Image (cartoon, rainbow over all chains, first blue to last red; front, side, top):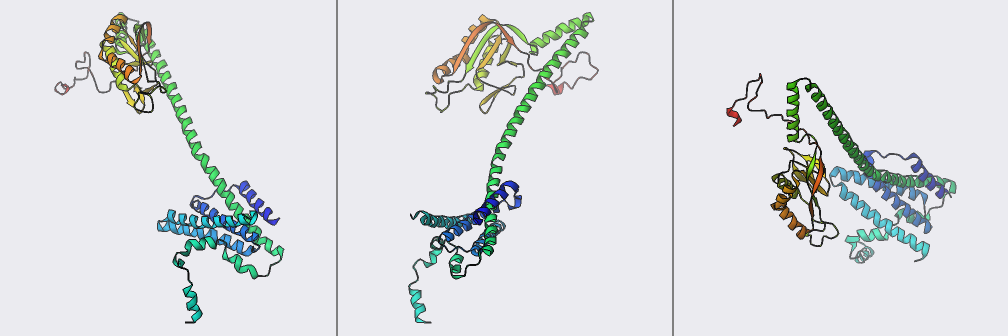
Length: 110
Length: 295
């Protein structure tokens, strides 16, 4: 119940406010979204495995987004920006994929 | 060193140094979940707040990204539409202005004629002017002549073409046809209602043929005023017509000419001479320019 309310609240807030992301922050947005998706899939999998922990979820979500943004920033400063972002996308993409596979196994037993 | 630690070193996996991808795959779930398994569950009210905050933040972030992507994609399309509208608006403005120029030119001509009609010398000057204008091609003329039509090869039947698209009429073809018509005695020529004068050019830019920098669209209709019979005979024997006939057979271009009893050729653009001036200025206070330099 609270989960549904929170998701609906977040979506409506995004749709209603329609915030314009500052130009300086725009390179971080896609990476932050990938990190958020990783945290979300991890949370759903943990919930299905009945080991969900709200503190772990929130901390991993915030930590993922911050670390991903920090790595992108560092890559920009070092002049390897695109490559580091690719690395993040590959790592988080693999994690999302295997978490999604685990969720699928839990839901459909296949 | 204790024996069991050396035993555990022995069972170390062979790919231990390459375990990054394996770790990624097997430990996809955040280790924190497993670590916190034994912790006592807190009350649901205390759990709800951080969970809700995290979920709100996560879904907010995803929606922002979606909105951003949605807002940015049509921006390019909008810019394109704006440019297209601007081009159309400016071309319309150019057309309006040239129509205005034509009107004003006609008005000044009429005013000049009416002011010259006052005296005998003025009337003679007016006649002379009219003849000069006729020769320079700055007035619209009508008369019998020859109408030559050139067109690209049909795109569907381009079997003999060496390219995927149909063969096209080029600026060289138009130039040679026009030169052959002048040689055959044409007195006034227009291509697609663009009058050719002494300073006209027939050029190609990209795929378009330009006459006096105005792009033409096929079919190209060349109207030449002159003696129809004599012009047709001479033109039919010209090298340009022979070449066009061979292009018709080789490349499928379309080429035809026919006599016409009445053709209307519009006025050409009046040329502005900036640097050229007569060698002998008949009644001028200004000293004539150095004769040696004019060679």
